[in-house]
Image 1 (cartoon, rainbow, N blue to C red):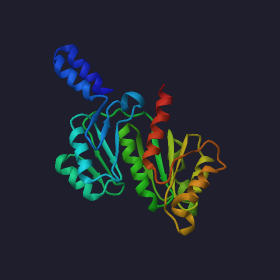
Image 2: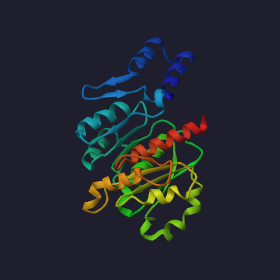
Image 3: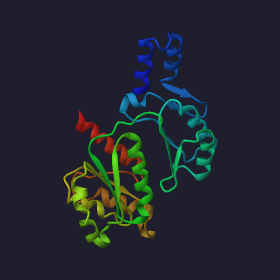
Image 4: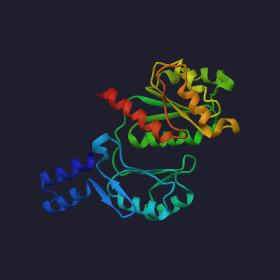
Length: 248
């Protein structure tokens, strides 16, 4: 949206000519890079920038995308290896790699944040990579957020010590593996929307997160939104949609 407004404003006030404006508008729907078609209209349709899912892409493909996008918009890539991050930084030195969440972010445009804060809760320290992915994504899409870590059901007194912070949140994201019980506990304690994220953390019978996923889907606390396994990115996007609805 900001890119389109900037293009049209430039034409209106005379700082851009018609031919230059037409060239920019030609690339606005999407940019065809051969291996990737970058969707430039996504912010107009749903308010989210194009986000790169780096897993399965080669380091050079991700670097190509950053090189094309770095002068146009903010860029976020998820599931980024250290090798890919190094390749991207060669063409986009200001891209910031978060090793814990495996995210790579680059900011060029101002981000407008929702007024309310989101709290991201983890059941255990092992759930932090997914929580950190949610945190980085929140920051890139305009959601203020913080993490409260390691307050799972094995020691509920740790959770009760932070209950005031949690109840003041506009949205609560609960990240948990094992049996995934923390989402039900939180759902029974707060009035805010709760977004549950099962993680692949746990021993064999957790089935790489399937047990936590099924537990969250069958939660006795009504109204919980459940993401796919390890999908911290999706949880952040769901929080942003909630804030957009409240604003409207």
